Length: 248
Ligand code: 13P
Image (cartoon, rainbow, N blue to C red; front, side, top):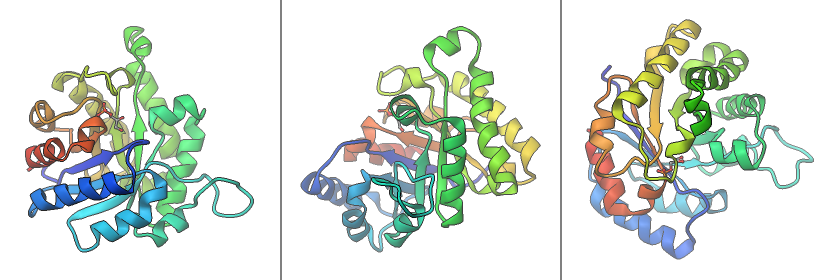
C-alpha cells in the first residue's frame, strides 16, 4: 500500500507560548519538503498561536479533542466548527488518556468522530488495549469493539477517518510494541475496515506508543502501518524530524 504516510505529534498537556514557538521554529527549520503528511496537535488553547506559526508551512494543525455537541449550553466544550475556524485539519478522538480519565465511552468517541467529519476535520480515532486485556487474550476483541462503534455511527464516511492503534501499555512507558505485534493488530483493524467500506485501503492506520527516532523506521516498514501518533518524541524537534524522515 503506497499511500502517503501521516506523522502526527500529540503534545498532550505540554507547552506554553514561548516553548511552542521555539519547537515549531526548530521543526520548520529542519523539515524541508517532507515525503509524508505531518500534523501537530497542541493543547486546544494554543490553536490560534499555532495557526499563525504554521501558516504556509508543510505542517498541518490538529487538536487533541472535540465536543460531542454542535453548539449551545455545554460549558467548557469547544465545537468542531470552532476548531475549523482556526484552520484545524485533524482531531484526535478517543485517546486512551481521555477514555481513562474523562470516562469517554466508545459511543462518545463515535459521536466525536462524526462531529469532526461534519465540520471537515479528519478524526484520528484511537483504539488500544491495556496490559491486562492483552494478557487475557482480549486485544482483538477490545480494538474491534472500539472501532465498531465508530463504523456503526459513521457508515460509509468511515473511509474518511484515520485510525491510531495505541496499546495502552506502550504509551509513555518506553515499551514499544514489536513491529510484528503492531502489524498483527493493524491487520485486524484493516480487515474490519474492509468489511465496512470499499475504501478501506485508503484509511491510514497509525501506530502510537513509545514510537521514537530509533524504532520508527522498522514500525513504519510494516505493510499496514501507515504512520505514527507520537507523544514524548514529538516534543523534541530533532527526534520528531527523524521520525518524519523515517516515513519517507
Ligand atoms: P508516547 O509516544 O509518549 O508513548 O505517547 C503516545 C501517545 O499517546 C500519542 O497519542
